[in-house]
Length: 295
Image 1 (cartoon, rainbow, N blue to C red):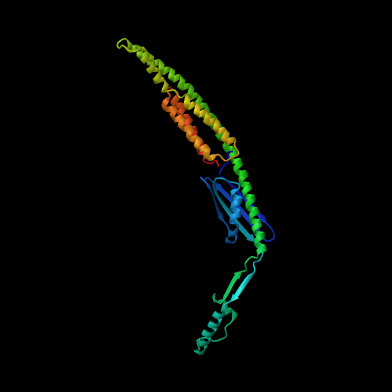
Image 2: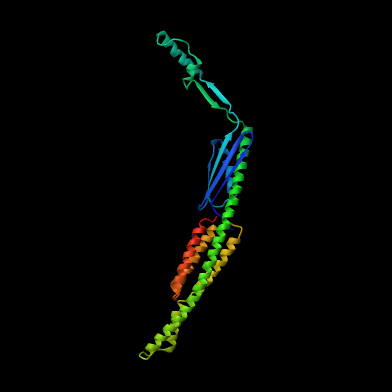
């Protein structure tokens, strides 16, 4: 199955307590790499969230961003630092006896000292944390499913493009085979004519000459390479139709197809062979670039 590794998805979930927003961006990567950016209070959920995202992807780098906006006014705790206040009172009393300050210590005075009062939000109780966690998991799951759909849709476009190029390359190889056969026949003819020219001056074993002509012609035979290339094309179709991710296998198969075309170019003889081989290699390179996007 051809599925794209790139994509983007977003989802939101909300209730009377909070609003949760999730975005997932996916790009190419050799392996599956899931990175989270979310509030520290959700760290305990990372394992479950990673499993949700990992259920829709086999390869690719996925950046998951989670934001939570609470709709409740946070409760606060105020802690009075009594030892500090007592020490401050003693110091002020000493200053008064020396006529350095006057008047009593007021609450406003204490607020000027950050050491006197500690103000912080109350920790979220278990029921609220559980409710927000449920929202987060629901939003991540929704975004992950949308990402799966988007990657599948892009995969269909990739497949159409790759199928068109595969058909073109297969046709070019068939034309290379025809041109190579014509070149081999022409080579045999040239060798035969050359032998005929020198036969009058040099005595030669007719059988040995004939064998040498056949040997030279056989060196330009690319029937094995063409047969293997056809098998690769058939294997490509099998991989693309399989339900399993096939990006790595297609990449390896393209390397094999390119190797066969290179061998054809080095062995085959003929006026049109070089042009056709260059065209086939150019299309294979375009296919290789596209396959880098396949999961």
